Image (cartoon, rainbow over all chains, first blue to last red):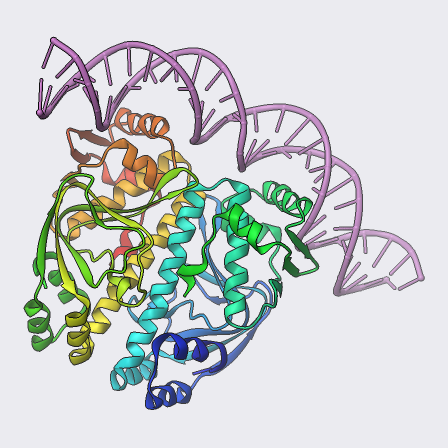
Length: 233
Length: 233
DNA sequence: CGCGACGTTGACCTGCATCAAACAGTGTGG
DNA sequence: CCACACTGTTTGATGCAGGTCAACGTCGCG
């Protein structure tokens, strides 16, 4: 299995033994490069392998009442279709935002390793637990927050997750998302997202241009977005 | 561990072996009865046991920007704080809606059994996977649907989940929820939920009075709410 | 009988959607 | 090197779904 980000996280989170680490690292995988807009996994597919995002971004999306709703963003190290080990079909598209690289790990092989190393099963379960916590936050974000805090919260979340895999420094990172992506994720219109972002800029909270996002005043953003990073640990 | 609903579901879903079943059934637990509004687990707690809902309903809630946002409903057989095996603190209140009965199973004991029976670990991971799928649906529901389909979708989900644990027949079930609960879950105001429900009644789709909900025209409700029950399997 | 929780109704208001058009940046072909 | 097409951002005008406020109805309960 592709090491780097994922493994690093599992190591800190799951406290894997030597042999478990080796088994994980030794998993065979195939690499695939995706261009912006490419779909890694299609809605309705019954994948026979798990996808590990190695670089770039994927978004989980589906058309709901004529809107394209994004229900998750994935950063390097994430395994967006991990749940397919349990549930045969995936009911969303996993779409590359900007270019990305993914690794696929066969279910059959992975299942065998999980049987041999129960500690790995537990660790991957932990990954699902974190993803679930993120969904919960999104539910609250969409259900209870107005546009400005909603966008602020999402910015904080992305920044924190990128930081955790070493892809952001001081809240500065490369983000190939368009405002339309944010609109789809936040359940807002493009126009309103645009105005919201301008407001954040006007207040001197963010600098976002040419695919580079910088959070200029983290604390203030967290305050506005009512953000507490604990759920991401 | 308390049998009934939960075990039945795990058995069908996870294909447990004889010994795993026995281990699960043999888990010691304590029972607690809750009244309407009682809080089973408080936000910020670091529970040392998992909660299995045996009868009644729990809702996961937290105050977000001065609104009480509900991010999940739990029906008998669910384990609302299962993730606390992985993450120490729970960041929501688990609140009883109507009277309910819960069983608590010590983390220490549970962890030991999971070590001894890896198949159980896998099966409980599957529970987390389903919960995550439900969150995803809620994200989409809140992000993309107007009030009427949003409420319709939630009704369909609750009905299906109740049916799966044998607590609904022909879409008829006991539901102690108030319209305010639905408002908190759907991110709508009480007033608007009221009008939405009246619209559903007017169309002859539901009958909901004195804590009894009946879906009169399942197919039409599913159509309106764009509901597909597959994610609950 | 009175109180409190819940449901219902009407009037009014607003945050965000929608529509439309212009602008800026970037890649492509002639 | 320019014309243009295309994608993404920005701005303005207008509309509406759903929020808010306020009051009343209704039922169960101490």
